[in-house]
Picture 1 (cartoon, helix red, strand yellow):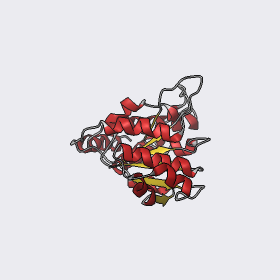
Picture 2 (spheres, helix red, strand yellow):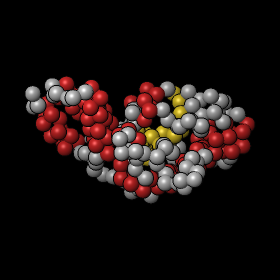
Picture 3 (cartoon, one colour):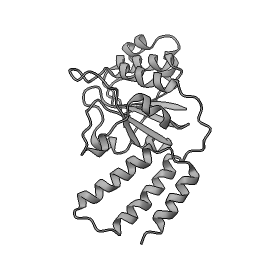
Picture 4 (spheres, helix red, strand yellow):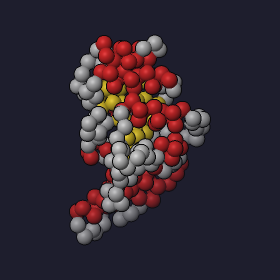
Length: 221
């Protein structure tokens, strides 16, 4: 099941509109991280309407620890990526589809500022909708519509992929291995770890493959 997470939403109407989009494409679970408004305000209810009202009323209030509940967490960003900015190297929505696990969260940032760098670092990878260079930022409900439409095309993946928790164990082992290596600067070491996190997050790694990688990095002395 794919859940939708809104980070610190400020406008009830946007929350209601996202709930409506979710209903349009068959998604049911909405999570609000530290909302800055009442998600059950009349504005939200008026925008949600019909079957989306149930999604709105059943939405969950949470903090960032909710990320730990999911096997894959996909953040969204409107910021153009740069080669040197590893954490903001995004996939487009079509590319993103193949990385959707059975228990996935799609995270949409604040209406004005999006996701912060430390929040992006908490995600497995980032998706970006290719928009016009003259006006890159979309309304949050419009972004949700594009992303959820793409996800709705996915057929069930029967391959047993590694979970987010299992990938986290491998990343810890990689960090231990990196601690044994010589790097010119601390920043270069941190960049290597970020790159590995991105590679692991983007890879369709099965549990068997993950165990093999874990064994390999464990042998590094």
